[in-house]
Image (tube, rainbow, N blue to C red; front, side, top):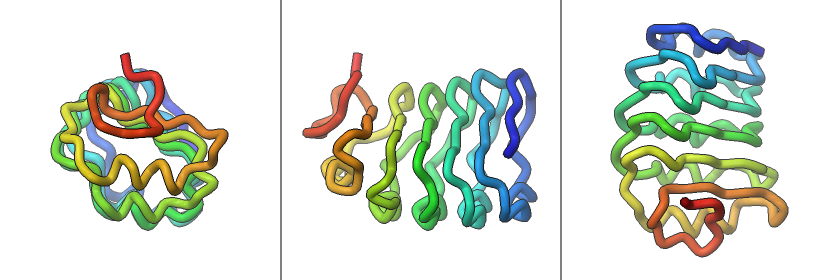
Length: 138
């Protein structure tokens, strides 16, 4: 588990070597650059929490391979493009997906998220997206 607030810089690609890492919390920090695709090698990762940073670029396809993931909060960054279709393979026990506050494009994947999620979970997405199960879009 790694948890920091107020750190600055990029997330190093070497983080992918920490294969036993289960939780990443970098909320309200000063992170810049892209989300490294090497995060997809963290097979035990169940929480990825990096909201309110200055992360940019496309969301990496490799995150779709995280089969232990239960909570993803990538909100309030600068991610662009579409949500990778690989994310629809996340486990049905997913309890939290938060992607709002990014200039992401809406697409067909949103409704697929509705089918993978636990009925008790919350799904927050891009405000204005046509998503039948999205909540809390202000």
